[in-house]
Length: 79
Length: 79
Image (tube, rainbow over all chains, first blue to last red; front, side, top):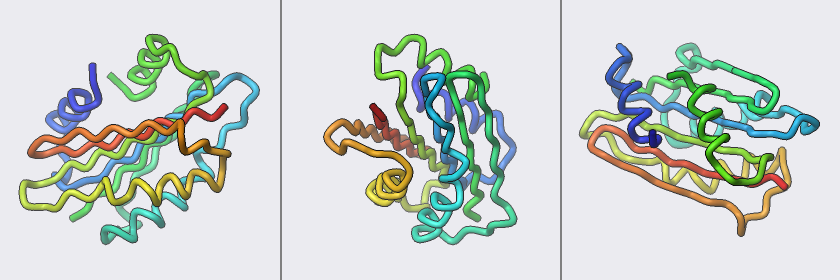
């Protein structure tokens, strides 16, 4: 399944604002390499806010991890 | 399907460096709202390079669009 399909399915099933930005950081790493995506979070939101008006109180952040993969998901409603 | 499953399947099927960062920007938008993810691309790579050493020549960028969705995928091998 490609990304466009994945996000289209998610969009259809989600009952959320239709003007929304999702940032996903997936760090595929060998066992010994250090996790760092959570450190990036503030910087990423700062960069995005140069392009769109963001309400920090409505930003939703999720972090998922296993041995090989670290996924940070940042959801930003734009309206 | 959740993100961790989605990326685990992708990781298993991909024959690529095992220390890799993927950044995905999905902009779900109403018809009249302007696309902007491509403008973000340089700024995002600049922010990431504060955390990890990046070889710009190995960065792979894909942009997919339909009427409601704009997806920017940036793949950065880390070793």
